[in-house]
Amino acid sequence: MSSDLNLDAIISHDSKDPESGLINGKLTLKETTNTVLKIIKDFRNQRNGSFINKATNTAGQAKGGRFFVENPAVFCFWNNLRRKRANGLGRKRGPLLSGTAYCFSSCSMILLNKVVLSTYGFKAGISLMFYQNVISSVMVLLLASCGVVSVEKLNWKLIQVWMPVNLIFVGMLVTGMYSLQYINIAMVSILKNMTNILTAIGELYVFQKHQNKKVWTAMFLMIISAVSGGITDLSFDAVGYAWQITNCILTASYSITLRGVMDKAKQLTRSGSLNEVSMVLLNNVLSLPFVLFLILLFDELSYVLNADVIRLPMFWVVATASGLLGLTISFTSMWFLSQTGPTTYCLVGSLNKIPVSIAGLLLFKVPLSVPNCFSIIFGLFAGVLFANAKIS
Image (cartoon, rainbow, N blue to C red):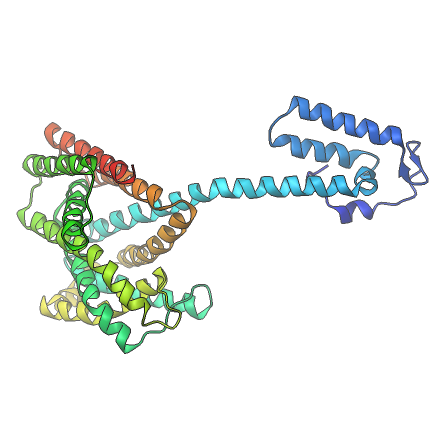
């Protein structure tokens, strides 16, 4: 008999049971006592979650389930116990599922962008970013119209306040695209550690926020790994490194500026708050005119129209998937953060660089030397050490 026994199913049994253990369709005292003793025996033998199922089955099997009919209080007790157990399993699986979804979407986004820019040889990184931002904007608006997510209505004052941070956001995405085009993923991950250093320095001067010695030690190790990684990088590209350093500066600036802008922006919304979905929509919609201007400035439009790669259906599949993953990262990061907390989120974000780096080295057949390999491992270790120092 299934453990998903319910009271309605039990009551629906014929009350005129001719079996000898029943008197006028009711369980005898002996039958009830035997059932309880059997449950206690199961408890002694099994002190885990499966006891609940086994005990339910034992009681349910007692004269066609009449043990529960004659003892409704016991039935309620088992139902509550099973419900609590199910909720407990949900709480245990929640962080694992949300963390896995966040890591998968984050890793896949980076790898797919690298595939589009390097494997397909697509040289218009800004145009790719424009396409991704359009997809994200349309998807958020569709989800909002279906009532799946809630977004704040845009107004001119809110746009004016958000404009400076959006300009930095656009610069951050553009430089990120170009750096990924020239540098292998492992070195991008190592150099991104420099963002943590610049952010810490910015927080010190802007917010007077001081870091402990462990954090500064970890950041010193990050500098060593970045310098040694660049020196030993067999595929070193000065242009790519320049783009990535600029990206680190803009990312740190975005992080610091966003804090002040968010407080002002909240005062200009009807609800008095600004959720992450609204921020995603603001960033993506407001970025479109600026990105379009950059496409015309860098003359990418003529390249895109004449590129052979845009005639490949698989190219559009990969480009579209990368755009959808960009939006997925926003939602999975919110989900993961709600299931765990800033501490775990920060640590997993640092650990996430390890599989991305390994996958990038293997998939794109990056030429490696032993010193460069050690520099990458050292840099990844420094990133984890930094995350651990920040949360300690």
